[in-house]
Image 1: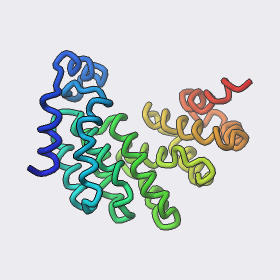
Image 2 (image 1 turned 90 degrees about the horizontal axis):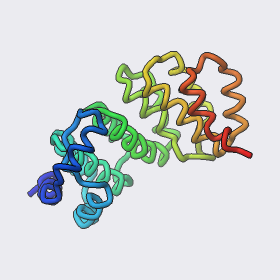
Image 3 (image 1 turned 135 degrees about the vertical axis):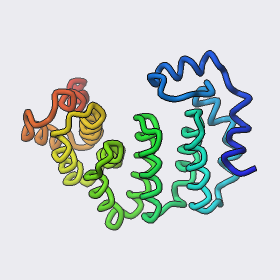
Image 4 (image 1 turned 60 degrees about the vertical axis):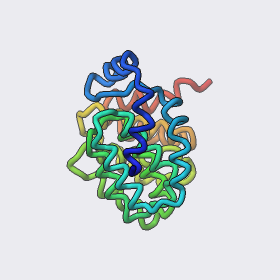
Length: 225
């Protein structure tokens, strides 16, 4: 059996139709589910994921692509866990393939998880790889733009502030909920490291940022004492 077949063989016996219906409803009935909670899924697949520590990047990406074509959403989650566990295998030449996954069966759950994987790849060689996000933020696909906006989450002192604020300003005119939310989330995350810079940016942007973005960006500030 190949990797994707092993994943499916492991997950199928754990299916729970009642939980599957709940999980699908939470995702607006866009995807089918086995009905397996994340901790149980990860525990079941842990031996397989560990066994692939020496697998070439191409093999991992092929497995992820095959899992992405499966109807059950847990297959996509398993693919992301596999990629994340072996993220050091990937380099700048794999960013396009990772972004390609973000454009398939797209919704916030898989896209945001892939943004972390892609961000980790980019962070490993920022000088050469971060310009790829400059291309992504201009992409016609909104989920690709969301990845670009979120790829620096958790970077703190390593954050390229000019890019973060530049992307936020570039995307500010967009009416899409997921883009507006992503801008606010990216700014709020960076505010944990440099709140003064984020405050100054919000003040300078004023009403060019949506109310949703401003609320998201300012959540950290409202909890300060």
